[in-house]
Image 1 (cartoon, rainbow, N blue to C red):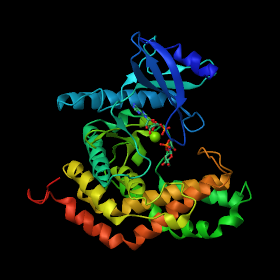
Image 2 (cartoon, helix red, strand yellow):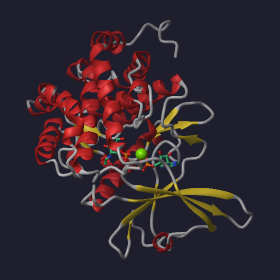
Image 3 (spheres, protein in one colour):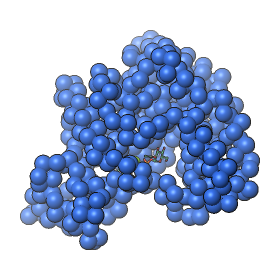
Length: 376
Ligand code: ADP
Ligand code: GN1
Ligand code: MG
């Protein structure tokens, strides 16, 4: 066991003995571990321990304050709805001194959360029903936070989904070319630069007051939704580090990006990457079933576009990191970020080719269906 992890664990008290600590999950930013605890009778239970990446989150304590606030709020909503707050929201485990995080001697910030049992996350869609459930869980999460004042939250990564800002940073990297890689990816760079006019659509409407600011998750990847093993239902959203004020479109867009993908995000064979229109329909159906009651018409009008926007933004971010010399996302092979960028570009191309059908799907589900049609 890593000695530093031992020291962190010493800041928590358990009924039982820590039997094992293992890296867990497939995140690109933080370090996640699963602890196995055994009680006196040998009965096992689990906990999740995470080190916040300070290279990405410069104010990790503010990240934790945001998470404390919103989990407390959602906890109340789950209770009021007669749900199970042990499973339907993340539960922070306090340290022995009662804080929501552990500041280690080396300056690293760690947090522990209760392990949600009988559920798991998926990297790719194995069961189409899960796509509907992810949409619904996302809509429910936004609904639970619809009455939470977004102004109470820190903007822990300024401009996180400010797509024109991402593009500006990208252009700067292209110009500086610090890793001397620009010459290898001219086609991909051109693809991105040609789409500059689209990047400002959402931020402009937010600035003009034509789209509302909401509390958003900002990292609504498929693998950040816990899905119940027994029922297949989406239980809750996890990975709450990036909860900040934002647009509902960012979250729907990121769900489109990851649930309609025909391949893993880092598929090296671009020909296997692509976009599934049927999954888009399933996602939009699930999302609107939970969210049509509070979304504005302007938001619903842009749901299809949000998929393209956030996938393009992610392509900009992955290609930008490749050009920067792989400084942000964890990589496990030399061209990892390039493979990731190419899957995003392929998806954007295919979504652009299906825009009319995507719009028609949103139109189909924006109003509640007749009871006989709404059989799910
Ligand atoms: P990362 O930033 O590494 O993506 P996550 O918070 O998403 O961190 O956690 C990584 C993985 O660990 C998740 O995809 C999920 O499978 C698992 N996980 C995280 N939190 C819990 C939890 N409370 N209960 C069960 N599994 C969890
Ligand atoms: C990162 O931590 P993880 O893997 O859930 C990233 C997201 C990206 C995602 C791409 C803080 O999320 O914004 O969309 O990778 N998180 C941060 O897979 O940058
Ligand atoms: Mg995650």
